[in-house]
Image 1 (cartoon, rainbow, N blue to C red):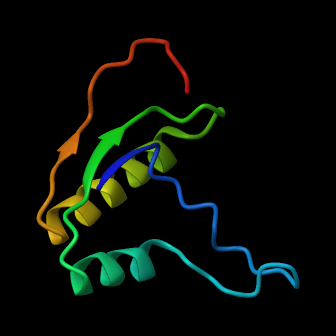
Image 2: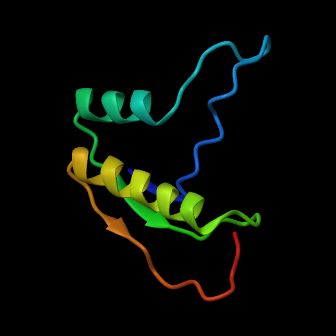
Length: 82
């Protein structure tokens, strides 16, 4: 699977309309259970975020990719935002 993301997990908020949490840990476990390798492409965050949050997002993508047998590319997108 190929994922293009800033790695920042915004799915952690539970609401009445969305009572199920599907975050990093669940995705990682399911990918491993189903033998799905995840290849991540880090894209800089579109919103203004702190540098530490951006590095955390990139680190999460790296961990997800490594633990599922994939890899991470953190290409230089310049000033482009997705």
